[in-house]
Image 1 (cartoon, one colour):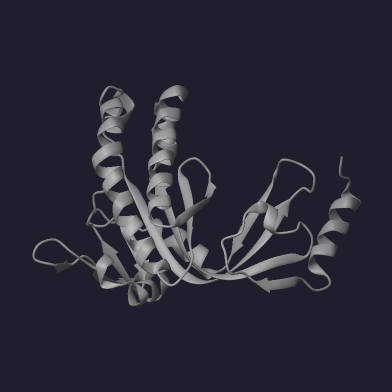
Image 2: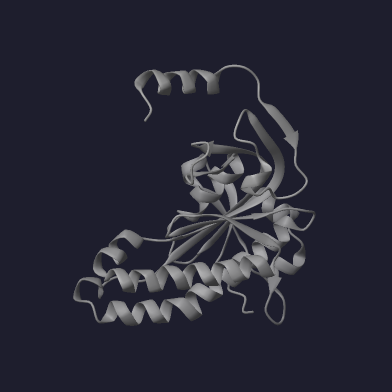
Length: 239
């Protein structure tokens, strides 16, 4: 068991010396990054999807019902991520982090987001709403979600306790933070928000849809970030 001195010594060690940072060319697994002062820097598109007000929903569900929702959510998101060359790298129940790499990373991420939006609206939501309609304390709630995407350099390090089954990769960088923040923008008209840089890099195949083709993204100003330009979409894309 760690003592006060152990904790202080560990923190002093983490804050001292230099880290061995190498450029990564693939999305790392936990075994690819050493536990010590080592990390991999990679340019990635980071997608974060989150079930909104999930705490209230779970509070009103039985544990088994909540488990049905989470298992369904994770299964659908994982399958869609895989189909678009994305890899799921973090899951905390109501939020999922998906990572994309390569020249098409922004295109793949935006395409995946529109498909995840379709899955949540057309497949998962009817099931969840059916359960909520039978629960008096949830009858006024609406199952909803948010998706955010940003792109940039990400430093991947390994954190936790060495030798225990409680350490994992940590994805450090603005792209990760902005993806999470973008997913939390609560606007009834839009479920997907992407940064201006993601929009600039994405191919037209993930920007235009319908027949005739129309722009699926609307330019918006992120008031919480000094009116930073972002793009929002309420479109979905079926499999």
